[in-house]
Length: 61
View 1 (tube, rainbow, N blue to C red):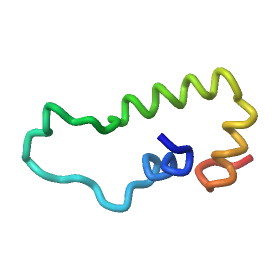
View 2: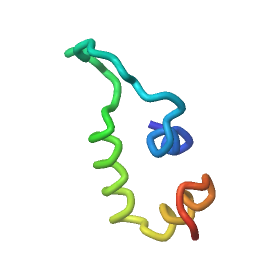
View 3: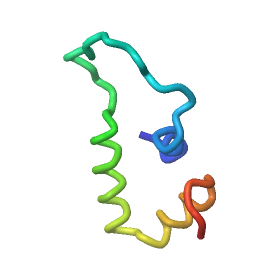
View 4: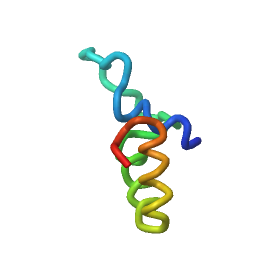
């Protein structure tokens, strides 16, 4: 996963509203995977991660 793809998890362009069951063999990341990875990055480099989020407009510096 690239860091540049992270902001889309904070503000998706369109919600996925359907009654279809999700595929069971998906190779993509879930929001849980992304949030766990964020927690690991934030524990190792809190200042750098905070500055990155400020740069992309997710939070204030």
